[in-house]
Image 1 (spheres, rainbow, N blue to C red):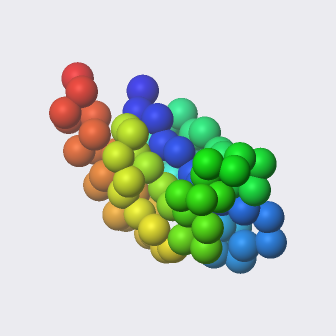
Image 2 (cartoon, rainbow, N blue to C red; image 1 turned 45 degrees about the vertical axis):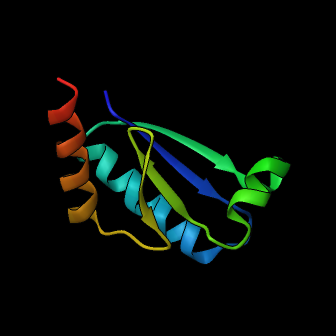
Length: 84
């Protein structure tokens, strides 16, 4: 199963939108979702600061700020094809 990671922070409306897309797609096309609040980790704060949300698919940065369900599904399918 492909792992999708969301780097987020509290009070970020784009993060909330990204999380909603991720959850909706996960209902149709299951994947493992991991969420990191960058405010809880000084290393992540230094890395992402205001560049959230960041979404990684299979360990590789795939989206920054916004994503669509269609784009996420395409990325998931590519990741699945690379790791049968």
